[in-house]
Length: 324
Length: 293
Image 1 (cartoon, rainbow over the protein chains, first blue to last red):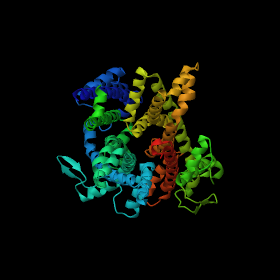
Image 2: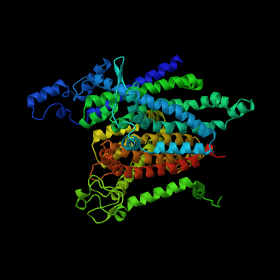
Image 3: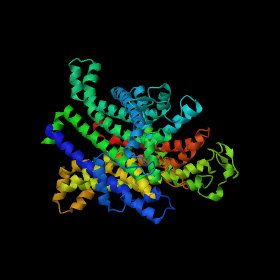
Image 4: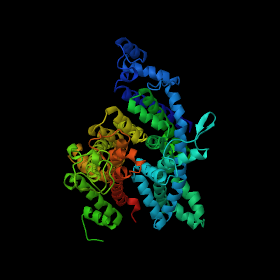
């Protein structure tokens, strides 16, 4: 097991190194940030001084190593636009995004798996067909459009829920959260539903497909022959057998929900990281773009690493296969 | 059951039995026809600025404009007839979806089969890259690439391809790896046929079924991704709006109750995407041997 962990860890480090090169070169090879940083009427001296100060006169690989050196000391640079450290900027927006993403993903997983198992267990009932129809919609309909419709119905026409912003927040450990206040909670509902819908559809499909396949296997036949109650079979055998793909997807979805939060946050003006990145792309604020992408890559690599470990714990075959 | 004998006919006979998928197929075909003949069926050419009048902008459905005809679905902020704009928008969305889908299919399949066939270092390199990309959300990748490349059709298609080719590569790799070990491939290789010919004529066709399924899903995804990017303001220029752009244009007016500008292009987009997905679903079920009794 230790060998497996070390092997996977080294792989993760290698992937991170490659990602950092790709992101850095990709973002820094294009566009000239100088025009954003200093006003056009600045003199040539000021211009060159700014270029030197930002290290833009050095070759790309040198810039990369300076960047990586700073990165390893926890310094991701300063935003060109806000002129504060990027980490501080992103850190300040992160709670809003995390709050939204966690609420969406957890509710989507709990609801989705239950509905999916039902739909797979009784594939021909009308309830299952309705569940599947909803999941097709959730899968197909672009999430930004769902967001618009939610706003149109619940905010504009019915006036029940606010259309954007975070509402009242409460400070816990020095960080502002929306969910403890009623007003804040009402602001979360629409963006959370919007963000959760796609995940919900995905969980339903996965759980249903898994259930349909597993129900035909000998495991279930023997469990039934042994006289186990259907509920016990579902809980103890089926859930365990369909859980591997679901855990993977859950983990990956946690990351991709953060990515999709970009869209939801833009629609609902939710002041999270996604809104920040869209604004930064608009004005070509390189340090923010690079830092965001590297953090997202880090997040994905970490999630993949954790998933691999969880798999190895659940399924010993994977452990042996990988170390052999 | 019909008395069909060719595989294609058998496939069609089975497909026809699923009424939902059949209706979806008809609807998708209809929308493609509308897109192709947009200039014939639309009451107005929405790209011709001479046709547009700002007097007609943001009018509700059923409004009779200065052109003397009824705007069945109303008009948008530029005074375009929304129905015409939707037909033309469909054309752009479908073009981009198909182009991105086919280019990614070609690149992805080539890489996947190359990896599976050649093996060794090349296999490790390609598949590492593909896995790396698959773990990264496509929308973010597309977002960054469009931001870097700038706006335009070619850039957009490029971004979609980079974001999606990995799905094809993974699928083609899996299929080719499985087919590679089968006897018919060995037998074909034992004949004097060139390796290239064996790969193209024998290996590739047998890898197609799963790739077709991925292709339908990815075309729908491309269309949806393009709409999302356009909505975020990173897609195509405003002068020739795709469906996503039309929706985006209408968003600011939604709060004041002018719902139609966003809603109708959205409905068109959804019918298209849901239709393609339903067809894709049926095709996938038919290709999946595990669901066969």
